[in-house]
Length: 273
Length: 261
Ligand SMILES: Nc1ncnc2c1ncn2[C@@H]1O[C@H](COP(=O)(O)OP(=O)(O)O)[C@@H](O)[C@H]1O
Ligand SMILES: [Mg+2]
Image (cartoon, rainbow over all chains, first blue to last red; front, side, top):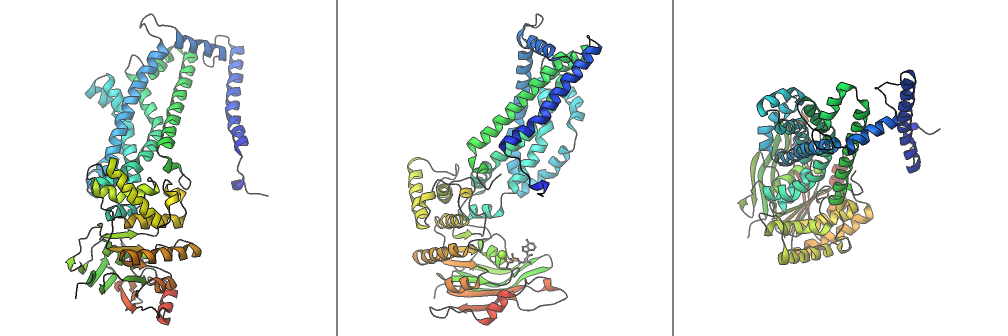
């Protein structure tokens, strides 16, 4: 009898195994929805598929007469702009701080405790402060994303950079490399795929912070819309929006994975993970 | 007579109250191939780190050609470690060209145009010398252990170091590959007039390649506080062409359990 730890599904059965829970979840929804509809045709909590499709289609195609825009498009553009700006600022500052902290013991001694302290503050708790200090505009929402994910990313990257084997740093110096050259030619390129990995891990939290900020103070955005229609129990709008957000998240994650494989093949070579 | 290329004068290394090396006084002549043996934990790597400049002695002086050694690694002292001494993100040829890039481009750390072409040519010749011409565009992860060590040697030699320091460079390799590496390093030593210091666990290797063998061990031993005595070079054998058989006391030393309790 083989041990369970040694049983590895092949490619085909892996797809099959992975599909089972998804199919079960979908079936579960359909059954629950049908049961509720049978009991109460006006039920709004678990709308049937065609209702979801209709409402989602309406949001994605029809111009809202008040704003003059298609809601799903306007919300997506607004949310992605905030998310992109927040992720961009976080990634840029992570790269600089992560390299400095990971490479220079002096900087680590000076800033390490500060970064560690900031990292334990729950970002959502700071949201009111951001709204008070920065106003209710775009800045506060972007700032929440940045404050929410940067400390984690910085700590992750700096530990990755300081984990570059001592042998490599010594070797570079015996080849005449200065601190600047070590940073540029040794640490930076090795940090890039790790930075992308950290960014991928931070996408989930970034979405959480974006939606939280939009829910509280906004007039457009995916999170804004969900929390707006919640008042009317409009599950037929909320669920397509959730599906759309999930799709965007998956596409962003896969795009980052592709960039990493395309530009840093050595990090994915045999021997590396 | 000219200065020895390296001289250590009453060098001590202590970590807290642990004494790793004590009273190490050694002269190393230009052009010699010194093998360093001893039980594990005897401070062989520490000795090498001192000479690389990775750390400074707690006491004592280290002179390179009569001048105090700068306690920082530099291009006149090349190094090959047992592992991790090539850069995983660079292809073989770029690993070798790294030293030339650093020497030629202070701000970008990388040469361009004609100068890059010249650097690649030089790096290519170095790769050829170590037998890696066919792998010039491979990343280290795609190379076998022996090929990675060849690459590390080519990379170290491109800056034409005076001294080459090897810390168990062939320790992780298969016996057959080791023999190839012996021929390679012996040839490079003769051709470049290098001074080589090589730490090894393999006594036969030490006596085959070296023209001098240093054995590190503790001179004194306190069973109640083993860390209070450090190691030093307890045996120092000059080797001539014929005299290549390891003496019994060295074999005994090598087969002993680690020095630390
Ligand atoms: N940075 C350090 N701090 C404390 N002890 C160390 C340090 N580096 C080495 N040692 C100790 O010094 C002793 C010699 O180590 P090492 O030079 O690596 O021995 P070898 O290379 O001969 O096996 C070991 O007991 C090791 O634990
Ligand atoms: Mg060692």
